[in-house]
Length: 308
Image (cartoon, one colour):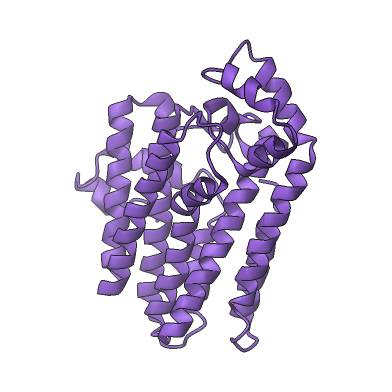
Protein backbone atom coordinates (compact mmCIF):
# COMPACT_ATOMS: atom_id res chain seq x y z
CA UNK A 1 0.00 0.00 0.00
CA UNK A 2 2.96 2.33 -0.44
CA UNK A 3 2.30 5.44 -2.50
CA UNK A 4 3.12 4.47 -6.07
CA UNK A 5 6.58 5.69 -7.23
CA UNK A 6 5.21 6.59 -10.66
CA UNK A 7 2.60 8.84 -9.06
CA UNK A 8 5.37 10.58 -7.12
CA UNK A 9 7.54 11.02 -10.23
CA UNK A 10 4.73 12.58 -12.25
CA UNK A 11 3.78 14.96 -9.46
CA UNK A 12 0.40 13.31 -8.84
CA UNK A 13 1.21 13.05 -5.13
CA UNK A 14 2.93 15.90 -3.30
CA UNK A 15 6.29 14.47 -2.21
CA UNK A 16 6.08 15.41 1.51
CA UNK A 17 2.56 13.93 1.58
CA UNK A 18 3.77 10.71 -0.05
CA UNK A 19 6.60 10.42 2.47
CA UNK A 20 4.24 11.08 5.38
CA UNK A 21 1.77 8.41 4.21
CA UNK A 22 4.53 5.86 3.71
CA UNK A 23 5.79 6.60 7.22
CA UNK A 24 2.26 6.23 8.59
CA UNK A 25 1.69 2.88 6.89
CA UNK A 26 5.12 1.60 7.85
CA UNK A 27 4.92 2.58 11.51
CA UNK A 28 3.60 -0.75 12.69
CA UNK A 29 0.16 -1.88 13.74
CA UNK A 30 -1.46 -5.28 13.79
CA UNK A 31 -3.30 -5.07 10.44
CA UNK A 32 -6.22 -6.96 11.96
CA UNK A 33 -8.87 -5.16 9.93
CA UNK A 34 -7.51 -6.05 6.47
CA UNK A 35 -6.79 -9.57 7.76
CA UNK A 36 -10.46 -9.91 8.69
CA UNK A 37 -11.55 -8.81 5.22
CA UNK A 38 -9.19 -11.28 3.56
CA UNK A 39 -10.12 -14.20 5.83
CA UNK A 40 -13.88 -13.63 5.55
CA UNK A 41 -13.67 -13.60 1.76
CA UNK A 42 -11.47 -16.72 1.74
CA UNK A 43 -14.36 -18.72 3.18
CA UNK A 44 -15.80 -18.54 -0.37
CA UNK A 45 -14.27 -19.69 -3.64
CA UNK A 46 -16.20 -17.05 -5.59
CA UNK A 47 -14.12 -14.18 -4.17
CA UNK A 48 -11.95 -12.36 -6.72
CA UNK A 49 -8.47 -11.99 -5.22
CA UNK A 50 -7.72 -8.60 -6.74
CA UNK A 51 -10.99 -7.10 -5.55
CA UNK A 52 -10.49 -8.57 -2.08
CA UNK A 53 -7.01 -7.02 -1.89
CA UNK A 54 -8.54 -3.68 -2.86
CA UNK A 55 -11.07 -4.09 -0.05
CA UNK A 56 -8.32 -4.93 2.45
CA UNK A 57 -6.36 -1.86 1.33
CA UNK A 58 -9.48 0.32 1.68
CA UNK A 59 -10.09 -0.93 5.21
CA UNK A 60 -6.50 -0.31 6.33
CA UNK A 61 -6.32 3.12 4.68
CA UNK A 62 -9.60 4.14 6.29
CA UNK A 63 -8.24 3.06 9.67
CA UNK A 64 -5.00 4.96 9.05
CA UNK A 65 -6.90 8.11 8.11
CA UNK A 66 -8.86 8.00 11.35
CA UNK A 67 -5.59 7.74 13.30
CA UNK A 68 -4.26 10.89 11.63
CA UNK A 69 -7.38 12.84 12.59
CA UNK A 70 -7.48 11.28 16.08
CA UNK A 71 -3.97 12.55 16.74
CA UNK A 72 -5.05 16.08 15.84
CA UNK A 73 -8.17 15.89 18.01
CA UNK A 74 -6.25 14.46 20.98
CA UNK A 75 -3.16 16.59 20.48
CA UNK A 76 -1.10 13.38 20.41
CA UNK A 77 2.58 13.68 19.58
CA UNK A 78 3.33 9.97 19.90
CA UNK A 79 1.64 6.83 18.57
CA UNK A 80 3.08 3.32 18.87
CA UNK A 81 6.14 4.99 20.40
CA UNK A 82 6.83 7.08 17.30
CA UNK A 83 6.28 10.74 16.52
CA UNK A 84 2.92 11.42 14.87
CA UNK A 85 2.46 13.53 11.78
CA UNK A 86 0.77 15.98 14.12
CA UNK A 87 4.11 16.43 15.91
CA UNK A 88 5.88 17.90 12.88
CA UNK A 89 3.13 19.32 10.66
CA UNK A 90 0.69 22.10 11.38
CA UNK A 91 -2.81 21.16 12.46
CA UNK A 92 -4.29 22.24 9.14
CA UNK A 93 -1.72 20.32 7.09
CA UNK A 94 -2.22 17.20 9.21
CA UNK A 95 -5.99 17.33 8.73
CA UNK A 96 -5.54 17.69 4.97
CA UNK A 97 -3.18 14.71 4.96
CA UNK A 98 -5.84 12.69 6.77
CA UNK A 99 -8.39 13.81 4.20
CA UNK A 100 -6.12 12.57 1.43
CA UNK A 101 -5.84 9.16 3.09
CA UNK A 102 -9.64 9.02 3.43
CA UNK A 103 -9.93 9.74 -0.30
CA UNK A 104 -7.37 7.07 -1.11
CA UNK A 105 -9.34 4.60 0.98
CA UNK A 106 -12.49 5.44 -0.98
CA UNK A 107 -10.56 4.92 -4.22
CA UNK A 108 -9.56 1.42 -3.12
CA UNK A 109 -13.17 0.67 -2.12
CA UNK A 110 -14.30 1.74 -5.59
CA UNK A 111 -11.78 -0.67 -7.13
CA UNK A 112 -13.92 -3.55 -5.84
CA UNK A 113 -16.53 -2.56 -8.48
CA UNK A 114 -19.19 -3.53 -5.97
CA UNK A 115 -21.88 -0.99 -5.12
CA UNK A 116 -22.82 -2.74 -1.90
CA UNK A 117 -19.23 -2.69 -0.68
CA UNK A 118 -19.00 1.02 -1.47
CA UNK A 119 -22.20 1.63 0.49
CA UNK A 120 -20.80 -0.34 3.44
CA UNK A 121 -17.64 1.75 3.22
CA UNK A 122 -19.47 5.09 3.18
CA UNK A 123 -21.86 4.07 5.98
CA UNK A 124 -18.92 2.94 8.09
CA UNK A 125 -17.14 6.24 7.58
CA UNK A 126 -20.24 8.10 8.77
CA UNK A 127 -20.49 5.80 11.80
CA UNK A 128 -16.82 6.38 12.68
CA UNK A 129 -17.23 10.15 12.52
CA UNK A 130 -20.36 9.96 14.65
CA UNK A 131 -18.50 7.81 17.17
CA UNK A 132 -15.70 10.35 17.43
CA UNK A 133 -18.21 13.15 17.93
CA UNK A 134 -19.96 11.15 20.64
CA UNK A 135 -16.64 10.79 22.42
CA UNK A 136 -15.85 14.50 22.15
CA UNK A 137 -19.24 15.53 23.51
CA UNK A 138 -18.99 12.98 26.33
CA UNK A 139 -15.65 14.24 27.66
CA UNK A 140 -15.65 14.68 31.45
CA UNK A 141 -19.24 13.48 31.66
CA UNK A 142 -18.27 11.19 34.51
CA UNK A 143 -21.79 9.91 35.23
CA UNK A 144 -22.79 8.78 31.74
CA UNK A 145 -24.57 5.40 31.38
CA UNK A 146 -22.77 2.25 30.34
CA UNK A 147 -24.71 2.10 27.07
CA UNK A 148 -23.10 5.38 26.03
CA UNK A 149 -19.72 3.67 26.23
CA UNK A 150 -20.89 0.84 23.99
CA UNK A 151 -22.24 3.30 21.42
CA UNK A 152 -18.92 5.12 21.35
CA UNK A 153 -16.71 2.08 20.92
CA UNK A 154 -18.98 0.69 18.23
CA UNK A 155 -18.46 3.86 16.22
CA UNK A 156 -14.81 4.25 17.14
CA UNK A 157 -13.68 0.67 16.50
CA UNK A 158 -16.21 -2.12 16.05
CA UNK A 159 -17.95 -0.59 13.02
CA UNK A 160 -14.84 -0.96 10.87
CA UNK A 161 -14.23 -4.54 12.07
CA UNK A 162 -17.82 -5.38 11.16
CA UNK A 163 -17.52 -3.67 7.79
CA UNK A 164 -14.35 -5.63 6.97
CA UNK A 165 -15.96 -9.04 7.51
CA UNK A 166 -19.30 -8.05 5.99
CA UNK A 167 -17.71 -6.66 2.84
CA UNK A 168 -15.42 -9.68 2.57
CA UNK A 169 -18.46 -11.94 2.63
CA UNK A 170 -20.21 -9.78 0.03
CA UNK A 171 -17.24 -10.12 -2.34
CA UNK A 172 -17.46 -13.87 -1.84
CA UNK A 173 -21.12 -13.87 -2.94
CA UNK A 174 -22.09 -15.31 0.43
CA UNK A 175 -25.76 -16.04 1.21
CA UNK A 176 -27.38 -13.17 3.09
CA UNK A 177 -27.59 -15.09 6.35
CA UNK A 178 -23.85 -15.75 6.27
CA UNK A 179 -23.12 -12.12 5.45
CA UNK A 180 -24.98 -11.15 8.61
CA UNK A 181 -23.19 -13.77 10.69
CA UNK A 182 -19.79 -12.58 9.50
CA UNK A 183 -20.74 -8.98 10.19
CA UNK A 184 -21.78 -10.02 13.71
CA UNK A 185 -18.47 -11.83 14.12
CA UNK A 186 -16.56 -8.67 13.13
CA UNK A 187 -18.69 -6.50 15.40
CA UNK A 188 -18.04 -8.68 18.44
CA UNK A 189 -14.31 -8.97 17.76
CA UNK A 190 -14.14 -5.19 17.35
CA UNK A 191 -15.96 -4.56 20.61
CA UNK A 192 -13.61 -6.93 22.44
CA UNK A 193 -10.61 -5.28 20.79
CA UNK A 194 -11.56 -1.80 22.00
CA UNK A 195 -12.41 -3.04 25.49
CA UNK A 196 -8.94 -4.61 25.69
CA UNK A 197 -7.43 -1.34 24.44
CA UNK A 198 -9.19 0.40 27.33
CA UNK A 199 -7.74 -2.14 29.77
CA UNK A 200 -4.24 -1.68 28.34
CA UNK A 201 -4.63 2.07 28.83
CA UNK A 202 -4.38 1.28 32.56
CA UNK A 203 -2.19 -1.82 32.78
CA UNK A 204 -0.20 -1.89 29.53
CA UNK A 205 3.51 -1.25 29.20
CA UNK A 206 3.80 2.37 27.98
CA UNK A 207 6.83 1.40 25.88
CA UNK A 208 4.79 -1.26 24.07
CA UNK A 209 1.46 0.53 23.92
CA UNK A 210 3.21 3.70 22.77
CA UNK A 211 1.37 6.14 25.04
CA UNK A 212 1.32 7.12 28.73
CA UNK A 213 -0.72 5.04 31.17
CA UNK A 214 -4.18 6.41 31.92
CA UNK A 215 -4.24 8.74 28.94
CA UNK A 216 -7.96 8.34 28.31
CA UNK A 217 -8.94 9.22 31.87
CA UNK A 218 -6.60 12.22 31.87
CA UNK A 219 -8.36 13.47 28.74
CA UNK A 220 -11.75 13.03 30.36
CA UNK A 221 -12.88 9.86 28.57
CA UNK A 222 -14.89 7.37 30.63
CA UNK A 223 -14.03 3.80 29.66
CA UNK A 224 -15.31 0.48 30.97
CA UNK A 225 -12.64 0.02 33.68
CA UNK A 226 -13.61 3.45 35.07
CA UNK A 227 -17.29 2.51 35.01
CA UNK A 228 -16.65 -0.70 36.98
CA UNK A 229 -14.35 1.04 39.43
CA UNK A 230 -17.01 3.65 40.21
CA UNK A 231 -19.49 0.90 41.08
CA UNK A 232 -17.40 -0.08 44.09
CA UNK A 233 -15.59 3.23 44.72
CA UNK A 234 -18.19 6.00 44.25
CA UNK A 235 -15.94 8.43 46.11
CA UNK A 236 -13.63 8.42 43.07
CA UNK A 237 -16.22 10.50 41.24
CA UNK A 238 -15.25 13.54 43.33
CA UNK A 239 -11.60 13.11 42.36
CA UNK A 240 -12.50 13.01 38.68
CA UNK A 241 -14.81 15.99 38.95
CA UNK A 242 -12.09 17.97 40.71
CA UNK A 243 -9.49 17.08 38.10
CA UNK A 244 -10.80 19.69 35.65
CA UNK A 245 -8.74 19.11 32.54
CA UNK A 246 -7.35 15.88 33.94
CA UNK A 247 -4.04 17.33 35.09
CA UNK A 248 -4.63 18.67 38.61
CA UNK A 249 -1.00 18.72 39.80
CA UNK A 250 -0.74 15.28 38.16
CA UNK A 251 -1.16 13.64 41.59
CA UNK A 252 -4.83 12.94 42.49
CA UNK A 253 -5.65 11.55 39.06
CA UNK A 254 -2.34 9.72 38.86
CA UNK A 255 -3.10 7.87 42.08
CA UNK A 256 -6.61 7.08 40.87
CA UNK A 257 -5.21 5.60 37.66
CA UNK A 258 -2.88 3.39 39.70
CA UNK A 259 -5.76 2.33 41.96
CA UNK A 260 -7.95 1.38 38.98
CA UNK A 261 -5.09 -0.64 37.46
CA UNK A 262 -4.83 -2.71 40.64
CA UNK A 263 -8.56 -3.12 41.20
CA UNK A 264 -11.12 -5.79 40.36
CA UNK A 265 -12.48 -3.44 37.70
CA UNK A 266 -9.79 -4.69 35.32
CA UNK A 267 -10.86 -8.33 35.65
CA UNK A 268 -14.55 -7.39 35.33
CA UNK A 269 -13.76 -5.48 32.15
CA UNK A 270 -11.68 -8.32 30.75
CA UNK A 271 -14.58 -10.71 31.32
CA UNK A 272 -16.76 -8.53 29.10
CA UNK A 273 -14.12 -8.69 26.37
CA UNK A 274 -14.03 -12.49 26.69
CA UNK A 275 -17.82 -12.63 26.40
CA UNK A 276 -17.71 -10.63 23.17
CA UNK A 277 -15.04 -12.99 21.81
CA UNK A 278 -17.08 -16.06 22.68
CA UNK A 279 -20.10 -14.54 20.92
CA UNK A 280 -17.91 -13.84 17.88
CA UNK A 281 -16.65 -17.41 17.74
CA UNK A 282 -20.20 -18.76 18.03
CA UNK A 283 -21.05 -16.86 14.83
CA UNK A 284 -18.69 -19.19 12.93
CA UNK A 285 -20.29 -22.42 14.15
CA UNK A 286 -22.11 -23.19 10.90
CA UNK A 287 -18.99 -23.12 8.69
CA UNK A 288 -17.10 -26.37 8.07
CA UNK A 289 -13.58 -26.68 9.47
CA UNK A 290 -10.98 -24.96 7.30
CA UNK A 291 -7.72 -23.11 7.66
CA UNK A 292 -9.49 -19.77 7.16
CA UNK A 293 -12.25 -20.49 9.69
CA UNK A 294 -9.59 -21.55 12.19
CA UNK A 295 -7.65 -18.36 11.53
CA UNK A 296 -10.77 -16.31 12.32
CA UNK A 297 -11.23 -18.26 15.55
CA UNK A 298 -7.57 -17.77 16.49
CA UNK A 299 -7.72 -14.07 15.67
CA UNK A 300 -10.68 -13.65 18.02
CA UNK A 301 -8.77 -15.39 20.82
CA UNK A 302 -5.71 -13.22 20.17
CA UNK A 303 -7.70 -10.06 20.83
CA UNK A 304 -8.08 -10.84 24.53
CA UNK A 305 -4.54 -12.06 25.20
CA UNK A 306 -2.53 -9.36 23.41
CA UNK A 307 -0.31 -7.00 25.37
CA UNK A 308 -0.39 -4.05 22.94
